[in-house]
Structure formats: structure tokens, C-alpha cells
Image (spheres, one colour):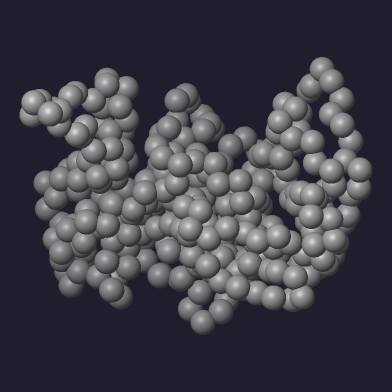
Length: 297
């Protein structure tokens, strides 16, 4: 609870379709879209944000489910973490379901949405490394019924941004029908914000491994060289086996790629990483090693 009453929004619009929501945002450029409000209302209560108007997305049924489309799952941006954590969704995209179940306490999982996790782009967003590893794309709804598609990594890296009046409508995720793992480390027991997280998916059709590390940088990091290296060591034709030493080496490879050693000084000496950073590197290495081991097992 807050000790002060936040300034009330001047207008609240409750559209029932995605295009109506876009039209409302276009009509009032200062309006802010809100779905679960887990991040937005925290900013309002802390005084960091005073929206002039709100466009509520909770009544748009078309973005609260999913459908199959050409070997992909088309996920509505309004899917809650609680819905994605259920067994039927876990059978579809296991890593995203695991991330949804780890998103926080029940209050957060019941309200927070997939689209909100992407739009807020918090480094600790649990869904983000999974979407990066899956190489998901976003379907953006714009004025006049326009639709455009961009890689989720482009939005998170600010290579492409949402334009005026646009909303994230859907997330297109390839269905790999292969093992997927999401692991995260927190600073305390039970649900909490990630100190580091790792999403790992196997792509048997391409004999590939995809890995993304979250929470340690402003956006998920893809250690591409480590992915390609370990994929060549997996015996894809005989039960996807790998020697145990390669698992350890993969973890170290991922950690070093994401948290590199400092640049040498002019005299050739190499500064030491601070103890906290070394601990974080060890954490990433352990998560990556365990994730690959579980996926292959």
C-alpha cells in the first residue's frame, strides 16, 4: 500500500479488439496501455509515472490465447504467466512454461502477461531469454489495421522500436518438438528476481543448440560461438550423447563469453574481476552446464 493517493488518470478506455486499442492509443498519444499492470502500477505508486490516460487491454479476448500456424505457435500478448504455466502449455513450449512458473508469487503470475514482460524489457524478465533462445518474432499491430513482424531480439536491443500507436499483438514461436530448459538463480529461497538465468533449447532438425543468458545485461545474451562449438560435439544420431567434460567446458565457455575478462592494461597486466563478478560468472557457468545436461538427458 502507498501512503499517498496517486494522481488519477484523466481517461480510461477499455477496447474489446486489438484494432480498437490501437485506435485509442492513436487518438491519445499520451495514453499508456496496461494489461496486468505489475510494472506500470508499481511505477505509478512510486511516483515515477503519471499517465494522462490508460488503455486497458484486459477485455481483448483475441490476445489471451494461442493458435497453431505453419509449424509455429502464435501466442497472444495477453497470455498470463499463470496460463502459460499450465500442463497443456508446458507440453507445447516447455521452457516458456518453466519461466512463467518462476515469474514470481501467484499474484504476479495471475496478472502479469507475456506482452507486458516484453514491452517493459526489464533485464530480469524471465520470459526474455527463452524467447531469445527460441528466436521468436513479434507481430506488431499498428494504425489502420497494419501488421508488421520483427524479431523479439530487435525490440529488446532497441534495433527496432514500437512506433506511435503500435501494440505487441502476438508472439510467433517455432515449435521445435525437442527438449527445452529454463533455469534461474535468485538471491533468496523461493520466487524472486533472477540474478542470472539461462534458457537452452535443442534444434535436432538443424543439429543445433540455442542458448540465451538473462538478467546479467540489459538484454539477453546469445553465446553463438559456444552454441556452435558444443553442437559439433553432440552425437545427434545416437541418443544425443556427449562426454561429461564437454558439459563443463560448455558452461565455462558460455560464462566467459557473457562475462569476459577485463581488457589488459598498457603494461600487459590483466586486472582481476571483482569477487562478485567472479561469483556471477560461476553461477552462469553452472546454470549453462546444468541446462545442457538436462536437455540432453
